[in-house]
Length: 390
Image (cartoon, rainbow, N blue to C red):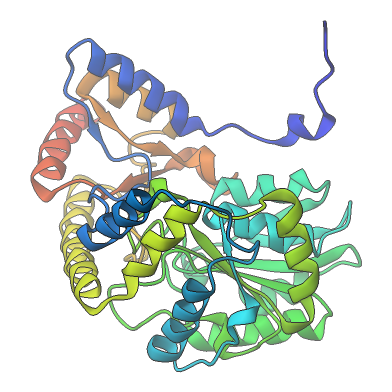
């Protein structure tokens, strides 16, 4: 049968980095040594205490659904996390445990967006966010940002680009791919402007904790009427466990729970019990050690890339990425990435995965490998760049 594909799928772009990853795996099977600095996944294993908590729960064998909103103890622990780390009080009934941050986005957007309504976001940005919006037959409006605003939206950009069709604003801080953190005053003004215009504010905070300076502030400090998306994947190092969370306005609790019941039933129970161990003092100490290692990697890579001729106008303050201007070497970063992989076995992410704003002259480096492996990758990269200097 020739089954027609839904029209929305024509607007949902693939991950171009996955094409490069597929080729990288092929080269590895052929015996090539590939250094992976493309996919955004921490290279550390699941923390020991978290892994043991998951094992202990599985050993009991009584693995049943939790409530759709999640394990009560985990929701309470997250509420305490906001109180201890941000000095923000959040009622745990507003916290929903989700299958990764992706599940949180689906809930937040699903209960707020109507077909044709648009959401403003930065360009460059994480591509799945655009595709989530399209899934609900809504429209993403990427706005070109630059180093002038640290690659973040601000109140002026929101006001200037608001239309009758605009429903809300999505800000990610720390950002993927740029690693920049929005300033507190800018975040507050963006929230106030969005709400003044009658829109929803969505705050992507999945890289909170992985910050290398002043703490990133949560949008919840400035308003209770925001949607905050977070995850155990990045700072907490639990990518494959698929656990995230969503904080919603009090008025949205019932409708969000109804949607969660229908599309998820519940987040995997063993993953929720494992995540609960993340908040122990001992585990937190291990996570802090990992954060310091990432900071050292950032400093190393930032210095080396600039020495090689890449421009990085904003030193990343969070996450584990550097989004570098490679225009000194190419006007096609996708082809550059493919050629580098074939010639030297270094895997990077081309800018076209993150939007259209100068995408062909930017490339993302993920410092999710050791400094020793990054040093080897940079030596290979330097050798590859020699062809451009002849």
